[in-house]
Length: 391
Image (cartoon, rainbow, N blue to C red):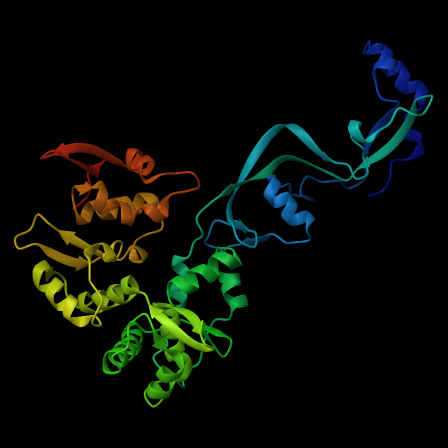
């Protein structure tokens, strides 16, 4: 920006005259006077302002970066290393000026004996800025991308590296990594892949059958023996990946073991049983389910929260597959779909399907108050839609 010409620069005498007209006492003011002037070709389109909280300020001051993510058809979000924020334009009636080198009153001293005039050019201006609001990451697209080419065994190429995913997914890198772990994705030759569900269940079946045949405790599954015994059937890295997904790794006497997680194993086998049935007789399902899990494990319906829905009102009672990850990320669409599936929900039944919609410091109770209407049925509090739903 070109500095203002000397002809347009105010003198100390002119400043003092202006103070007299404004009826301001010179001794009540700082000794340093900033005279601001616009440089040539200054435009409001030259800069954008973003309002940062203390956490993001420290993030920037530490040399870290903030990234704006979103495809052309998506509303842009801003991501730090581990959080995602909505961007919203906020207008202000006050003109915001960009003045490099301009000192604030707390940075000035009154050590000089007389006033001095400092001529400072304005580099740009704005009458709006970006407000940030922490939001849930948009991760449904991540699963959708990886499911374009699920891993079913060796000799199949990959599609997406982590940089590819960071380009496409509106979430921070940490949030993406957590979701990749949640959906049991694995990295093969630098590419992230999600396992085909039938293939994942085949791997789990190999592991649980080995536990039964070796008469192991499911709390002490040997990694070395598992790899040796199952290597002729599947790649070793896939066997180890399956153990990482369904167990907790630990070391004992320099040997690696896994404690299989009862809830995860039971949940996986339940999903396998339910995936091809529209509805399953609840009593029959529970019998088959218990018979299908490794000896020593116990099945419980609370292991199926957010993946299966029990209908206690039907005769006989039934259970069906309903996975929260298959539902819309949009709150209103989610509620509309749930009330289409079932007219009235108890809080216990609906909570697993709306828990992930809660924003920062928001509760499921607050969501239900906003998007549902409560009533009492047979002494039990139930929730239904606030608006008529098209059938």
